[in-house]
Length: 262
Image (cartoon, rainbow, N blue to C red):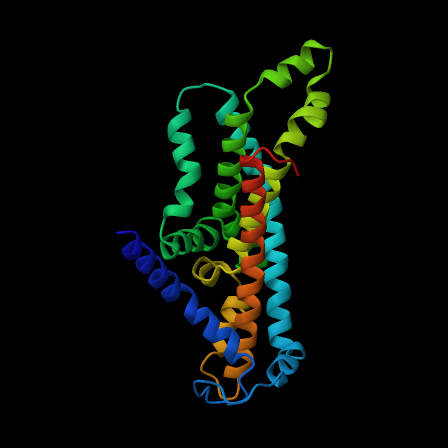
Protein backbone atom coordinates (compact mmCIF):
# COMPACT_ATOMS: atom_id res chain seq x y z
CA UNK A 1 0.00 0.00 0.00
CA UNK A 2 2.84 2.36 0.87
CA UNK A 3 4.54 1.72 -2.49
CA UNK A 4 1.27 2.37 -4.31
CA UNK A 5 0.76 5.68 -2.51
CA UNK A 6 4.33 6.78 -3.20
CA UNK A 7 3.96 5.85 -6.88
CA UNK A 8 0.71 7.80 -7.11
CA UNK A 9 2.38 10.78 -5.42
CA UNK A 10 5.33 10.64 -7.80
CA UNK A 11 3.06 10.46 -10.86
CA UNK A 12 0.98 13.35 -9.61
CA UNK A 13 4.03 15.54 -9.03
CA UNK A 14 5.44 14.57 -12.43
CA UNK A 15 2.21 15.59 -14.19
CA UNK A 16 2.32 18.96 -12.45
CA UNK A 17 6.00 19.83 -12.58
CA UNK A 18 7.42 18.12 -15.67
CA UNK A 19 5.72 20.62 -18.06
CA UNK A 20 7.14 23.46 -15.96
CA UNK A 21 10.59 21.91 -16.24
CA UNK A 22 10.17 21.70 -20.03
CA UNK A 23 9.38 25.43 -20.15
CA UNK A 24 12.49 26.24 -18.10
CA UNK A 25 14.72 24.06 -20.28
CA UNK A 26 13.25 25.46 -23.50
CA UNK A 27 14.15 28.96 -22.38
CA UNK A 28 17.77 27.83 -22.91
CA UNK A 29 17.09 25.60 -25.93
CA UNK A 30 19.10 26.78 -28.93
CA UNK A 31 16.67 25.07 -31.33
CA UNK A 32 13.92 27.54 -32.33
CA UNK A 33 11.59 24.60 -33.05
CA UNK A 34 12.19 23.33 -29.50
CA UNK A 35 13.30 19.87 -30.57
CA UNK A 36 13.36 17.48 -27.63
CA UNK A 37 15.60 16.65 -25.96
CA UNK A 38 17.66 19.84 -26.43
CA UNK A 39 20.97 19.28 -28.20
CA UNK A 40 22.41 22.73 -27.56
CA UNK A 41 21.78 25.44 -25.00
CA UNK A 42 22.02 29.21 -25.28
CA UNK A 43 21.29 32.34 -23.27
CA UNK A 44 20.41 34.29 -26.44
CA UNK A 45 16.68 34.15 -25.70
CA UNK A 46 17.26 35.58 -22.22
CA UNK A 47 19.28 38.44 -23.73
CA UNK A 48 16.44 39.21 -26.14
CA UNK A 49 13.85 39.03 -23.36
CA UNK A 50 15.78 41.55 -21.25
CA UNK A 51 15.68 44.04 -24.14
CA UNK A 52 12.10 43.30 -25.22
CA UNK A 53 10.13 46.48 -24.58
CA UNK A 54 6.75 44.74 -24.68
CA UNK A 55 7.77 42.16 -22.09
CA UNK A 56 9.36 44.77 -19.83
CA UNK A 57 6.29 47.00 -20.02
CA UNK A 58 4.04 44.04 -19.21
CA UNK A 59 6.29 43.07 -16.31
CA UNK A 60 6.05 46.59 -14.85
CA UNK A 61 2.26 46.56 -15.24
CA UNK A 62 2.03 43.19 -13.44
CA UNK A 63 4.27 44.34 -10.59
CA UNK A 64 2.38 47.62 -10.18
CA UNK A 65 -1.01 45.90 -10.24
CA UNK A 66 0.19 43.20 -7.82
CA UNK A 67 1.64 45.64 -5.31
CA UNK A 68 -1.42 47.91 -5.39
CA UNK A 69 -3.88 45.01 -5.11
CA UNK A 70 -1.84 43.54 -2.26
CA UNK A 71 -1.82 46.86 -0.38
CA UNK A 72 -5.60 47.14 -0.69
CA UNK A 73 -6.05 43.53 0.35
CA UNK A 74 -3.85 43.94 3.43
CA UNK A 75 -5.88 46.90 4.67
CA UNK A 76 -9.37 45.63 3.89
CA UNK A 77 -8.65 41.96 4.62
CA UNK A 78 -7.15 42.77 8.02
CA UNK A 79 -10.01 45.09 8.96
CA UNK A 80 -12.59 42.49 7.91
CA UNK A 81 -10.84 39.73 9.86
CA UNK A 82 -10.80 41.83 13.05
CA UNK A 83 -14.46 42.75 12.63
CA UNK A 84 -15.58 39.17 12.09
CA UNK A 85 -13.29 37.48 14.59
CA UNK A 86 -13.39 39.93 17.50
CA UNK A 87 -17.06 40.98 17.40
CA UNK A 88 -20.34 39.10 17.35
CA UNK A 89 -23.24 40.58 15.39
CA UNK A 90 -26.22 39.51 13.32
CA UNK A 91 -25.22 38.20 9.90
CA UNK A 92 -21.57 37.57 10.75
CA UNK A 93 -21.43 34.12 9.12
CA UNK A 94 -23.08 35.20 5.83
CA UNK A 95 -20.69 38.17 5.61
CA UNK A 96 -17.73 35.86 6.17
CA UNK A 97 -18.99 33.67 3.32
CA UNK A 98 -19.39 36.69 1.04
CA UNK A 99 -15.78 37.74 1.70
CA UNK A 100 -14.42 34.27 0.83
CA UNK A 101 -16.73 33.66 -2.15
CA UNK A 102 -14.80 35.64 -4.82
CA UNK A 103 -11.88 33.21 -4.79
CA UNK A 104 -14.24 30.27 -5.32
CA UNK A 105 -16.15 31.80 -8.25
CA UNK A 106 -14.99 30.99 -11.79
CA UNK A 107 -12.69 33.73 -13.02
CA UNK A 108 -14.75 34.34 -16.15
CA UNK A 109 -17.86 34.98 -14.04
CA UNK A 110 -16.00 37.45 -11.83
CA UNK A 111 -14.47 39.13 -14.87
CA UNK A 112 -17.78 39.58 -16.70
CA UNK A 113 -19.50 40.84 -13.55
CA UNK A 114 -16.79 43.41 -12.85
CA UNK A 115 -16.63 44.47 -16.49
CA UNK A 116 -20.37 45.15 -16.49
CA UNK A 117 -20.17 46.94 -13.14
CA UNK A 118 -17.34 49.24 -14.25
CA UNK A 119 -18.56 50.04 -17.76
CA UNK A 120 -22.35 49.82 -17.54
CA UNK A 121 -23.29 50.68 -13.96
CA UNK A 122 -20.47 53.00 -12.85
CA UNK A 123 -19.54 54.37 -16.28
CA UNK A 124 -15.81 53.93 -15.63
CA UNK A 125 -13.40 53.36 -18.50
CA UNK A 126 -11.33 50.23 -18.11
CA UNK A 127 -7.68 50.74 -17.20
CA UNK A 128 -5.03 49.76 -14.73
CA UNK A 129 -7.12 51.04 -11.79
CA UNK A 130 -10.06 48.79 -12.65
CA UNK A 131 -7.73 45.80 -12.96
CA UNK A 132 -6.22 46.58 -9.55
CA UNK A 133 -9.67 46.75 -7.96
CA UNK A 134 -10.60 43.47 -9.65
CA UNK A 135 -7.44 41.76 -8.37
CA UNK A 136 -8.07 43.09 -4.88
CA UNK A 137 -11.44 41.31 -4.73
CA UNK A 138 -9.77 37.89 -4.57
CA UNK A 139 -6.51 39.00 -2.95
CA UNK A 140 -8.52 40.11 0.10
CA UNK A 141 -9.52 36.49 0.65
CA UNK A 142 -6.01 35.15 1.25
CA UNK A 143 -5.16 38.00 3.62
CA UNK A 144 -8.46 37.53 5.43
CA UNK A 145 -7.91 33.78 5.85
CA UNK A 146 -4.36 34.21 7.16
CA UNK A 147 -5.25 36.93 9.66
CA UNK A 148 -8.42 35.20 10.90
CA UNK A 149 -6.48 31.99 11.50
CA UNK A 150 -3.85 33.89 13.47
CA UNK A 151 -6.42 35.79 15.54
CA UNK A 152 -8.09 32.51 16.47
CA UNK A 153 -4.79 31.08 17.71
CA UNK A 154 -3.81 34.27 19.51
CA UNK A 155 -6.91 34.68 21.64
CA UNK A 156 -7.19 37.93 23.53
CA UNK A 157 -5.40 37.29 26.79
CA UNK A 158 -2.21 39.19 25.99
CA UNK A 159 -4.08 42.19 24.66
CA UNK A 160 -6.34 42.26 27.72
CA UNK A 161 -3.30 42.05 29.98
CA UNK A 162 -1.68 44.94 28.11
CA UNK A 163 -4.73 47.13 28.54
CA UNK A 164 -5.10 46.11 32.20
CA UNK A 165 -1.58 47.43 32.70
CA UNK A 166 -2.65 50.82 31.35
CA UNK A 167 -1.78 50.61 27.66
CA UNK A 168 -4.17 52.34 25.27
CA UNK A 169 -5.75 50.57 22.30
CA UNK A 170 -3.27 51.90 19.72
CA UNK A 171 -0.32 51.10 22.02
CA UNK A 172 -1.59 47.56 22.57
CA UNK A 173 -1.99 47.06 18.84
CA UNK A 174 1.52 48.41 18.11
CA UNK A 175 3.38 46.52 20.84
CA UNK A 176 1.32 43.34 21.24
CA UNK A 177 -1.15 42.63 18.45
CA UNK A 178 0.87 43.69 15.41
CA UNK A 179 4.06 41.77 16.32
CA UNK A 180 1.98 38.59 16.67
CA UNK A 181 0.20 39.27 13.37
CA UNK A 182 3.29 40.31 11.45
CA UNK A 183 4.17 36.96 9.87
CA UNK A 184 0.53 36.24 9.02
CA UNK A 185 0.25 39.60 7.28
CA UNK A 186 3.48 39.01 5.39
CA UNK A 187 2.41 35.51 4.35
CA UNK A 188 -1.00 36.78 3.23
CA UNK A 189 0.58 39.65 1.33
CA UNK A 190 3.01 37.35 -0.48
CA UNK A 191 0.22 34.98 -1.50
CA UNK A 192 -1.94 37.89 -2.61
CA UNK A 193 0.88 39.27 -4.78
CA UNK A 194 1.47 35.84 -6.34
CA UNK A 195 -2.24 35.48 -7.15
CA UNK A 196 -2.39 38.92 -8.71
CA UNK A 197 0.86 38.56 -10.63
CA UNK A 198 -0.18 35.48 -12.62
CA UNK A 199 -3.93 36.21 -12.99
CA UNK A 200 -5.17 36.34 -16.59
CA UNK A 201 -8.93 35.68 -16.87
CA UNK A 202 -10.24 38.48 -14.64
CA UNK A 203 -7.50 40.76 -15.97
CA UNK A 204 -8.64 40.21 -19.56
CA UNK A 205 -12.09 41.59 -18.72
CA UNK A 206 -10.97 44.50 -16.54
CA UNK A 207 -7.71 45.83 -18.03
CA UNK A 208 -7.93 48.72 -20.47
CA UNK A 209 -7.07 48.56 -24.15
CA UNK A 210 -3.37 48.96 -24.88
CA UNK A 211 -2.28 47.56 -21.51
CA UNK A 212 -0.85 44.10 -20.92
CA UNK A 213 0.18 42.21 -17.84
CA UNK A 214 2.87 39.57 -18.18
CA UNK A 215 0.46 36.59 -18.47
CA UNK A 216 -1.56 38.42 -21.13
CA UNK A 217 1.64 39.32 -23.00
CA UNK A 218 2.64 35.65 -23.01
CA UNK A 219 -0.76 34.60 -24.36
CA UNK A 220 -0.78 37.28 -27.07
CA UNK A 221 2.75 36.46 -28.28
CA UNK A 222 2.74 32.67 -27.94
CA UNK A 223 1.93 32.00 -31.60
CA UNK A 224 3.61 35.01 -33.17
CA UNK A 225 6.56 34.29 -35.50
CA UNK A 226 9.98 34.38 -33.81
CA UNK A 227 8.45 35.21 -30.43
CA UNK A 228 8.12 31.68 -29.02
CA UNK A 229 11.71 31.52 -27.64
CA UNK A 230 11.27 34.83 -25.80
CA UNK A 231 7.85 33.71 -24.56
CA UNK A 232 9.49 30.67 -22.97
CA UNK A 233 11.92 32.94 -21.14
CA UNK A 234 9.13 35.19 -19.89
CA UNK A 235 7.12 32.12 -18.84
CA UNK A 236 10.16 30.85 -16.92
CA UNK A 237 10.44 34.20 -15.15
CA UNK A 238 6.73 34.05 -14.36
CA UNK A 239 7.15 30.60 -12.83
CA UNK A 240 9.99 31.80 -10.62
CA UNK A 241 8.28 35.03 -9.58
CA UNK A 242 5.09 33.15 -8.73
CA UNK A 243 6.87 30.37 -6.85
CA UNK A 244 9.04 32.50 -4.57
CA UNK A 245 6.19 34.30 -2.74
CA UNK A 246 4.32 31.02 -2.24
CA UNK A 247 7.45 29.36 -0.86
CA UNK A 248 8.14 32.25 1.51
CA UNK A 249 4.51 32.30 2.65
CA UNK A 250 4.65 28.57 3.32
CA UNK A 251 7.85 28.96 5.32
CA UNK A 252 6.34 31.79 7.35
CA UNK A 253 3.21 29.77 8.05
CA UNK A 254 5.32 26.74 8.97
CA UNK A 255 7.51 28.75 11.33
CA UNK A 256 4.43 30.19 13.00
CA UNK A 257 2.76 26.82 13.37
CA UNK A 258 5.89 25.40 15.00
CA UNK A 259 6.15 28.28 17.43
CA UNK A 260 8.81 30.27 15.57
CA UNK A 261 8.79 34.03 15.26
CA UNK A 262 9.54 36.26 12.28
